[in-house]
Length: 354
Image (cartoon, rainbow, N blue to C red; front, side, top):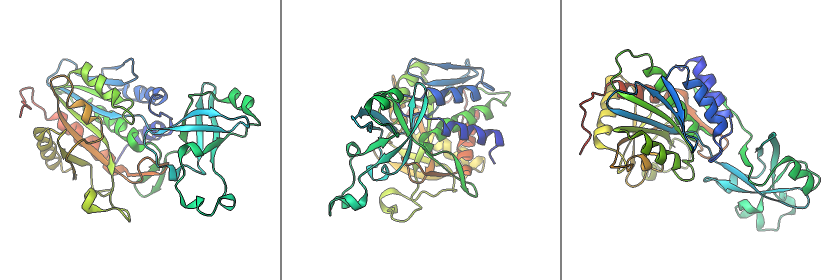
C-alpha cells in the first residue's frame, strides 16, 4: 500500500499543470519531495530534475519518467474575445468540445470552457464529422479582444480542468497520469533506495521534460549522466475495456502489476534481470511487446552516446491522453518497488554487452 504522504505527493504532482515545455511548476513539486531523501537534487537548462544517490557508486543507473502532460496553447484571440488554440502533444479532437480548461498565465490560472456550435444550429451532416482543433474556441467570458488579452497572452499553455480523485477501491482518475505517474514512480524508487545502507550503484532519478513532443529531456539528461544501465517508466494502454482488440494490442489489465516491455529498444539482459527481480520479490508483472519504437523516453536513452542497456517498465492506463485517465495504485506501487529492487541487486561487475 502506498503511504498517505506518497499519495498526497501524487495528488499534488498530478494536479500541478505541466504541459510539454512548461513543466517548471510540477518540477518544483518533484524536487521538494525528492530533496527530502536523496544526496542532492540537480536540474538543467531544459528543466529536467535529477535526484542523485551514492554518486560514486557503480554501475551508474538512470531511472527516468517524464513529468510533462498533453495540453494546448493559445494561438489567436478574435475581436469578440474568443480564444483559438493548438494542441501540445497528441489529443483526440473528439474529446475536446465542452470541456473546462485552465489557461496558465503569468498572473495565475484563467478558467475557460471549450465551445462549439450547438447541435441545434449545425448543418444536417456537420454533427457526424469529428471536429478539428482549429474549429473550436475557448470562452473565458471576455467582452472583446482587448479584455481577453489583458487576461491571457499568445503562447500561454492550457490544460484540462480536472484533478486527482479516487474512483473506486484502488482505482484513481486524473488527467496527466501520462506520465506524472512515471516521475512519481522514480521518486518513490529513490525514497526506497535511500533507506538501504549498502547501496552499490550510483542512482540518478530523472523527472524528464518534453517526452510528449520530442524526447528532448531524455536525450540531454542521458547524455549528461552517461548511465551504464537505465530503466524508463511510463504508462501503457490497458486493453481491459470494451472495444479494444487484444489481438492487435496484447492483454494488459489494471491491477495485475507493472508491465515489463520486450522490444528493439530494450536490452535482453535488462529484461531478464527485471523479470527475475520481480519473481524473487513476488511482484506480479505483465508483458508487452514493442517490435519497433516504444514511444517512450527509452527510445532516446538506449541510443545515447555509445548506447545504454535499457529497460522499460509501464503502468497500465485507461483512456490515455484524456482528462479521465485511470490507473490502479497497486500497479504504481509495485512499479516503484520493482525498480528499487532491480537497482539494489546490481553488482559493480555486471556486463550488459550483448
